[in-house]
Length: 185
Image (cartoon, rainbow, N blue to C red):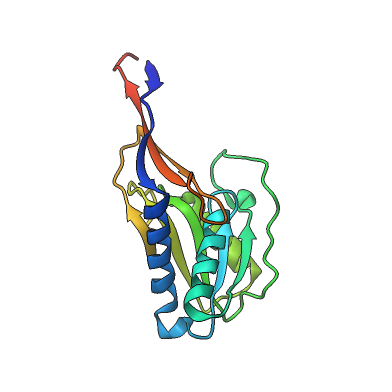
């Protein structure tokens, strides 16, 4: 029997999130391959606010606002997770572009695998990179992020919640909750 979750514990407060996003943006624009611009594509729901924040930081660093898009990966999922989310909005051609797929949390890798399938249906990028705010570990697929805000090793009983606005806000936070398992079957 699973008992209620413990209270939330804050892992990252707003200021720490902003520093992590700034560091990720610097890492994204640093390689020579990114000098002619990147296309940032946020995975719908979790990656939407993060892609907007990264685009803002990249514009601050380089003086050029990168193109962004949003990806609905529901049709590409290999599990039963179905949610009502807005459609894909990627208006720039991905062919021969460096594409950065953006999500808030990387856990099993299944959502990212779905995103890779969706991106390749849009065209043939020169390269696809992955940026995540939180990397939980515990992968089920051989997927690794290129840009990480914070690595937070977790157990399967733990749940990460990311509260992130498209613009920096004082209530931005990354929290963790733990379900207590009392061992009853």
